[in-house]
Each structure stands twice: as structure tokens, then as C-alpha cells.
Image (cartoon, rainbow, N blue to C red; front, side):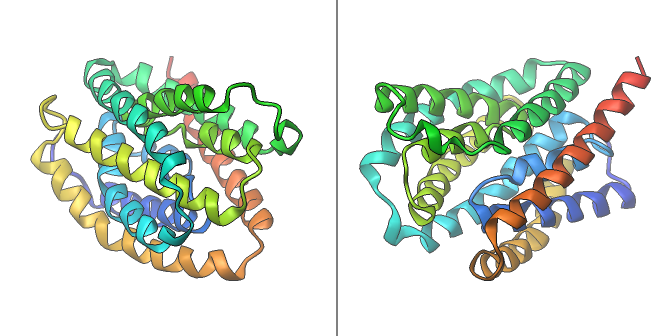
Length: 251
């Protein structure tokens, strides 16, 4: 893609700032918040590549921040399968058309946003073969994150059904996302998705992303998470619908 305009850079900065704040607060959601906003001014490949690249340092910081609550025996098998999925997702991203990617991203965001509105507590202890199911979901989410930069809420629903506390969930998700974002970013290199302009845009967004991490880390300890999640869901739905309407009217 050609050099980005000032408007594109400003929107990318604001979107990644908002997304990283949500990620640091809840442990997930950067793609669901930032992607539909990025799609308003960027092509899908640029949006996904830049967002996954800037997610690597903040998910790494989250791993360090939540390390005391991390249980490696739970996280490593799921993250390993997710890593394989992310590399496949990187190839899917490089081989897919712009319109297909854009509509797929928006549809998945809306479906996953609707799913996060439900509390899966009733499923606690009822998921059969949780290690097998968790591994399968980890692989699927890895493909989705590598190709579309969204999919984390599907894994969130699974871990919530396990009855884990908030700290354990955030630790699990932070390690998983760090592995997936890192492997997807590496996978973009041989596929030619890392153009010089995209690298520059990712570097420009790095500062706002780190600021969002700092803000979100403080929000996590002071703001009611349920209220914050509802506000985030409202923003996600509104931004997703705006992209969907624009695409449908251009058909």
C-alpha cells in the first residue's frame, strides 16, 4: 500500500490506543475494538498486520504483569496449538481478497460481540473433555487471529466456563495472545505482508499502544469490569455496524 495519509495515521493511533486500553483492562478485546475502526480508513491486510504487530509488546507486558497467576500446564498446550493456527492464518490473510476479508472480519466481530454479552457460568463443569475442546478452540482462534485479528472472545467464553477467577483468566489469555500475535507477526514476513509503510505505521502506533496499556492497567484495578465491558461492547457493535453498512451500500 502507498504511504499513509495524516487521517489514516491519526485513526490508527486512536484505534490502537482504545484497543490496547481494553486489552490491558480485560485481558482481551484489542482486535474487536480496534479492527472495525481501522477498517474505516485502511485495507484489511494493513489493519490486521499492524494490529497484530503492535499487540506483541503489550501482550508480553501482560504476561509479566500476571505471571504470578499463570498456570503453564493449562496455557502451554492451548498456546502451542494456537501457534500452529496463527501461521495458517497468516497464509490465509495473504491469499484472501480485500472485500472477503473486510466482510468476514465485521461478521465475526458482530457474532463474537453478541457471544460476549452472555455469561457462560451455566456451562461451568459441563464442557466435555475440556482439554480436547480447549485445544481445538485454541487452534481455531489462532487461525482467526492470524487471518482476521479477532477471535479471542471465543476462547474467553471457554475459560469462563471453567470457573477460573479473573486473575487466572487474564494470565492465561495474556500468554496465549503473546504466543499467537508473535507467531502471526513472524508469519507475515515470508508472505510479503510486512511492507515498509506498514512497518512505519506499526512503529508510529507503538507509543499510543503502550500508553493504552498503562491506562488500561489502572482501569483494571479501579473500574467495575462489568460496566467497562458493556461500554466496550457498545463501541464494538456501533463501529462494526458502520463498516458493515458501508460495505453493503457499496455492493
